[in-house]
Length: 193
Length: 159
Image 1 (cartoon, one colour):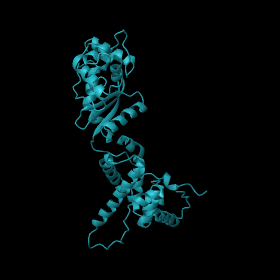
Image 2 (cartoon, chains in turn yellow, cyan):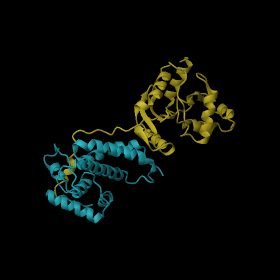
Image 3 (spheres, chains in turn blue, yellow):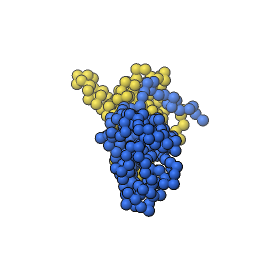
Image 4 (cartoon, helix red, strand yellow):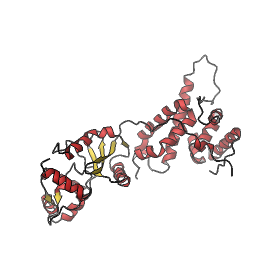
C-alpha cells in the first residue's frame, strides 16, 4: 500500500457556500408556535408549501415534491419567504385573522384542489365544519373519508385552514401537525384571535 | 424523471467544487470560478435528463469555468509582454495550504495538472476526466501517472 492520497487533506483555508441568485422556488424551514414548518414560495411569491416538517426527512419529502411538480431549481433563501413567515407569525400570535399571501395549489391533486378551494371559500375564521359537511358542499356527499385524506395531505396548512374541519362524531380528528397543533389553532380562533 | 432540489446539490457538493476550483486556478480566483460554476449549473439544471452523476456533472462545469478563466486571463496579457508558452496557463498560488504540494502541482504542465487535480481533488474516474478534458480514459490515466511521477508521489490510482 502506498501513501494515502495527500490531496484529500488539502482544502481552501477560507471558503463558503456559493451565493446564488433568486430562482424558481425559495424555501426556509421555520420553527413556529405550532411546530416546524417548511415554507416555500415561487419567484412571484405565490405560496406552494406551508407544511409540517418535524424532521429533515419530512422536509426532504416536501422539497422533492416541489422539485418534481414546480421546478428542481429550489434554493434555501429565507429572505424571499419573509412575507409568508411574517404572515404566519402574525396569524399564530393572534394579530391577524387572515394570511395576506397568494396560495398556489401546484402540489395538490385535482381532488385536493376541489376540497381545499371549497374549504377556503366556505369556512371562515373561528368557524368549524365536518368532513361530511365539506364533502356535501363540494358536491361529493359520500366522500367524507376521501375529503379527510385530501385534507391530511394539505400542502398549504394554516394558509388553507384544514384545521377547521373536524369529525361529525366529536373530537377534533387528525391533523398533519398533530392533534395538539390543531387544538391550539382552534383555541386561538375561538378566542377571537 | 426526477431531479433532487438544487439546494441538495449545493449542500452535498459545494466543498468539492471549491476545492477543485482551488486546485485548478489557485486561491485568488477559486471563489470566482466556483461561483460561476454554480451559477451556470443552476441555469442549466432543469434541462438535465437524468440525475445520475450529479457530482461529476458539477465538477465538469467547474473545470470548464476554470479553463475559461485561464483563457480570459491569457487574453488580458498585454501584447508587448513576452508571449507565454501555448497551453501553459499560469496558476496563482501565493500561499499553498500544504507547504509546497500546491506550488508543485501549479508548476505541472497544464494538462497533467488538470488531470491530476480532477482525479485526486475531484475524485473523478478516468472516464469522467476524459470527458472533461475532451480526451480518452487511456490518455487521462497517462496524464495522471506522468503528473504523479513528476510530483514523485506514490499514490494508488485504482480508478
